[in-house]
Amino acid sequence: MNITYNEATKALNASIEKANELNIPVSIAVVDTGGHLVAFARLDSVFGVIEFALKKARTAVMFGVNSDIMGTIVSGAEIHGYGMLNSNEGLLTIAGGVVLKNKDGNIIGAIASSGGSPEQDKEIASAGTAVLN
Amino acid sequence: MNITYNEATKALNASIEKANELNIPVSIAVVDTGGHLVAFARLDSVFGVIEFALKKARTAVMFGVNSDIMGTIVSGAEIHGYGMLNSNEGLLTIAGGVVLKNKDGNIIGAIASSGGSPEQDKEIASAGTAVLN
Amino acid sequence: MNITYNEATKALNASIEKANELNIPVSIAVVDTGGHLVAFARLDSVFGVIEFALKKARTAVMFGVNSDIMGTIVSGAEIHGYGMLNSNEGLLTIAGGVVLKNKDGNIIGAIASSGGSPEQDKEIASAGTAVLN
Amino acid sequence: MNITYNEATKALNASIEKANELNIPVSIAVVDTGGHLVAFARLDSVFGVIEFALKKARTAVMFGVNSDIMGTIVSGAEIHGYGMLNSNEGLLTIAGGVVLKNKDGNIIGAIASSGGSPEQDKEIASAGTAVLN
Image (cartoon, rainbow over the protein chains, first blue to last red):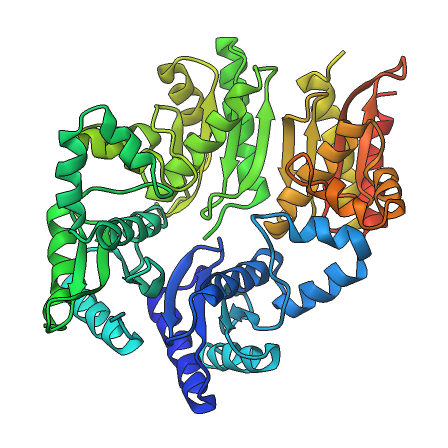
């Protein structure tokens, strides 16, 4: 199963609400199982974090784990992790990219936030995952 | 002046409404005056048109005219038009990319649709411009 | 639904059989709905056609139509079609890229051949589609 | 001598058998002496490891040693190792990329697995080398 626009926008809106609550100017991206964009909102963030959000979301869906889990794998590989980061047009392995699952537990895409601290971005992205379960 | 997220989402929603009315699965992108993404919706379109929408929007804001006007300029340049199309990471000069202006007539960004015919995409994108005037 | 390895290899083997029957040294690629590689066979073809096969398969799945149908659309756009070809890391709009559907008629990926004439490549790729219906 | 499709598929099948035995969803790539793809199988792995497999195989054949041997060289070069990793469109110097030799001991290509632990990937890739000796 791949995420629909309706599901993506539901997740995006939940994350936007959380970002507004925290009052942080972030960019939030939702991608499908192929890593392709489905919905996006730049909440008046600087434009440098647009690609951060896209890459975190793609990193998550590409490996089927949250971006910070992939970060732990990359860190553990020492200098060779640099080769991983250079792959797939560039991974981004900071917290804030979270896989999206349907009720059956299958991955249907990913959502990511960038612009806050890694912890805040993870909180914002995670708000988007809750509404799909 | 640059487009805010509130303005971008207002334009995007008007275009989404028009796309739903026409019942065409398109991708719609809103970019700021720097050509950077502000809001995006893939209404269950194929993923090949995501970049078409982004490039039409960027082509419009990059030259300050709608994408089809730039298309006329490119066509008129004959073989040299290919050089233009190759510039700026690739122009897309088909109808459907429309500049967004504020009430004072200043360009604040652009909106583009892809997935329908050039005429339909232009109609969908244009719906997004009306709400900002 | 996305193509499984078992389905991909079934399609690939049918196309390999057809290529051997025609006795043409081709490359054959199978991609999933996100355009990502699932199975590949270079039947002793020159290596230049590896990317041709990959791009034809991606072009098909990206727009949900066979690569030559996309070719007709691109041709009809005159000089502006060049902008389309430059998108998505480069389309290839020659015959030989064919969408793969499951029994319900949903697209689950694409298969493409390169190395023969466009007609031969299309015949080889099409052999791979028949076994999934 | 360069690997033929028949040899590549023989190696690939031996590695697939080992991967199924270990029950790990990996991607396996076989490349020729020019580093160009000959055969590929994604055994329902996540798509992020496709490029890992390709890069490990290319790293091996490009330097004529297994990817983890190149990893030792890169690690030993300290900061300069990053420059090596950045070369040739990006090396990947983790275990799992193994050179393929013919009976005379000449390198005819490489095979690589990705998706398991480095040790598992090396075991899977090595299964493919045994059948060509």
